Figure 1: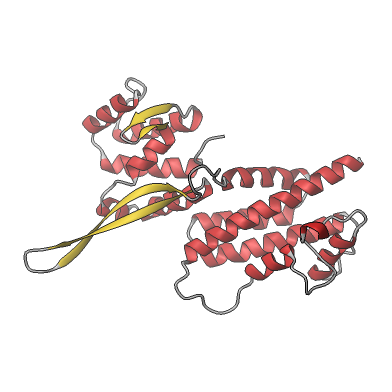
Figure 2: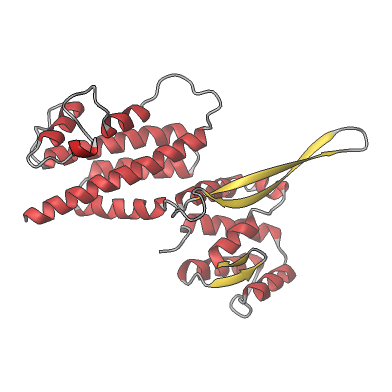
Length: 286
């Protein structure tokens, strides 16, 4: 599976197209060993580069060492000047949000300069940074997303699937509040649908359906993992996650983007655990 999704690589290609001339493209292709593999206008050439990155993703040599062509394209795109980034804000947003699906984020270093009349201005330099410490595998949200969609389709959870797709689409477009709402709806619908498929009365409330999943024999939600407990005073992962997804009041200093990214990641990873568990349970009983 590619390290970066199509949206991220294509957004990087569209920014690269604004940055380079034909001669500069020649230099990039020589640097990356892609000479004679593209042709035409700059737009066509960077699009062909993106196609190679998404279908073959060869390793290339860059100033930052050996790395995938997709990553090289993204790293070069984020060096675009402020004018290009501001005039391609939609692609810039797609790069930033797409990178978070792959376990990366963009780090900004701002430099202050002072003009001859004392006026201050700022320039920004951007670089890629893994979201997890070195040596710790990054959470690839794209992989979790793809597996979730496959298992939701396989096990016939259409409503949960639609909420998930809306959440991911809103997240990709920077609509954080809408994405958060769809993530809550997705997770609630998934557990509700699992409960119904395992025999719970569909007219019961969501909380009762979660309790049903904990009292099944054998249980679907495990008390020994603190996922659920009949004693509501005890720590419970499901209830804690549900509370985290339904905060009340303002959160001063908390980035909407960072918060939404956390919710997306924790929801997808948690939901993947439960849909896998359901899939194994159903298949074992066939």
